[in-house]
Image 1 (cartoon, rainbow, N blue to C red):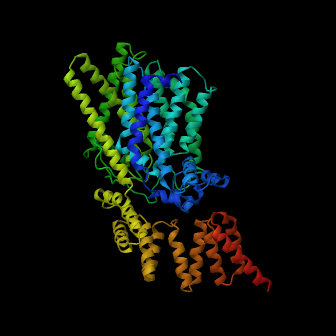
Image 2: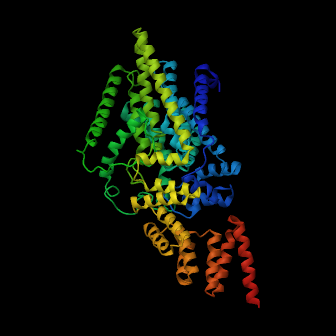
Length: 605
């Protein structure tokens, strides 16, 4: 506690709080949208913190609350959504305050973690830690994880991993065993991190690399061996989690997000080659963050000799050679056990932290996208650690050489660079609050994105501008056939217009693309019931019941169809099953009670 109130610690923390609070104040009035609708607004299982809801979070994937399937499993993230919903419903202020606060807190944790690097003086170490945490805080790439509420998993898992790493560091410095509260609490934080976002599985490797770079006082191979002994409980937790995700919690092929085989999903070699140019794109975004947008398209590479695959691979090989050179230099100077003037420890932690943190989204397993800006949320810490270390060394060089002009010019350049980052972050925060402009901005860069065109169509539809909505739905349909939503949405417009045949074709196409996409079934059931085709109506409602087994409205509608089929036994069975979930929809629950009473009275007569 005394350390916290020291000037060299308190002042940087106050700066981080002030700067972060100012930049992210510009998102406080932004509404919930995009995946927020499915994850929060329409997901009744995050509208309350009850024992039933908690069991649901731990037993289902993230989209189960709206009747869909996904590979994601994030129960603790949903706990934070439920907490926000209890406080504010769907009013955005509390949601943004929560995400913003966690982000600022993460910057403080990074400063606290990195200032323990032994760089010759506490002032030098503190400066490197402060610059790293400040760049992490204000970089505009971070808005995708912070301002987008459904992206909160990134800030949550980072917070828990940083807390676990700090406790691990503290316990090691004090020589405490696994019986100490610090390491036990770090294990708890690891579990919470994994339950916030799946990328928490990389923590054991982060802890191992941190041990080698910061805590070890041995040679490299001995540090690896002892580090594995020190971190084995973290690996054990990740192993247990992995077994569960591949068995009981394997909702939709955990290790492959693709429903159909393709050249990318079937070859880890192709995924590796494709990842190399993405690294170059990430580097450009880190250094010059312009043209930021979501839903980025990427090229699939199949040969090492394609441009720019080979050049990025050569740079990576050069980094390994550079690390080996720094290590040998530090050994020759006898500094591995003491002060890291050579920078070997900084470079080692920086390089390995970056690639470890990116590993889950690098193509090791084929996931649903090749590149997202928010995937750099935690990896960028290591990048800016190296940059900050080099900047501090450069300042020291100019100061030692008494080159005052160069010193001042460098200071001005850094100030301008940081201001540019802050300005870009504010612009992004503002743009995130203008939904129509936000989607149109993405379409400037990714005109072939069916998802963005569909989302823009939804916005216009909700604004009762169905003509413009239809334009974007048709644009989404024309792009490709791997996305069912625009077919359903366009079908709904045709159905309202009276083009039932056209609507049926579009609904059937949506189901063909994704048989688990439940929306078309309910519309088809209504259409066939209205046409008197009760057998087809029954087929669709039965499929809908299998997809939405906890939805009382589905069972109510099913009962109505079976009544029309003169099957009152099945109608009563549906009503009695649906009544079990009436607490999720009290209005429908009342309708079911009235219908049960009516059917029972008819039976008595």
